[in-house]
Length: 202
Length: 166
Image (tube, rainbow over all chains, first blue to last red; front, top):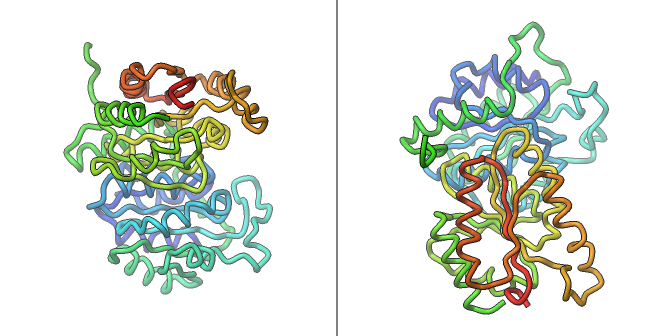
């Protein structure tokens, strides 16, 4: 199963959601797989921060579905967030873990899931996230997306994907700071709120 | 920590517009945590480590709500990675309220590292901070931190020390 194909399936189901996603090759893949979600997606370069940030966003915007596109390396970096999500039970947080069993962006050394013994979905269930599953085919993944985007409970799907990267795709040019402004302005416009407002004096 | 100091913290947070508090409890702020939990205007989120709390606060910022990370100053060390990434890499601010463990007057050997490292770590991250040791300066210290962080879009910190917490 290719991550890019999974992204295309997920993207087809998204419209008004907000997305926080992890570092590495998945950034450019998501940029291409979900062009209609570019301003609604925060491209972050933070191992271990993606799902916590998505959860914080879900707390602040409880009426809106938030999607976390995390990774095996990122989730293993901070497993505690699974326990916090398990306890807090946000109704609007859908977590995808792209599990390619490697640190792809630095050339592919194995993560802990490569051993075959470490099961992130099982860890999530043990942490109190009842709806935590593993998908190995596009059909399974798409069905979990449909369920996870509709349910009033936290939902996690581990997508077991190949270590390949979609070739010949457009590179995202912006850095983290520009990405933040683009995302915040999108949230402001779509929510009708001010997050980064004017100074007292010009 | 006296009830009057707890009340001053709550007044400052409310004046700053804070509606979400992430915390990992400590002993110096012991009465503050149940007061935060009991406050109907503030949602509390208990976290497994302070770095996770910092990242959650960053997400709350992106929603337009205001969050605070409450912790012992040792939690600053656990938060360095997400603070550096969010603050220096993206301009996503986190306002921190921490107890000043390990300053002069400390009588626990295990707390000495917290006092020695807090201010250098804040300086390394270029995070401005104010150490508040007078109860009547708590409220202003908190609102000043929010004013600064929402102008700079960078982290700031208030450390409560001295007789405020002992």
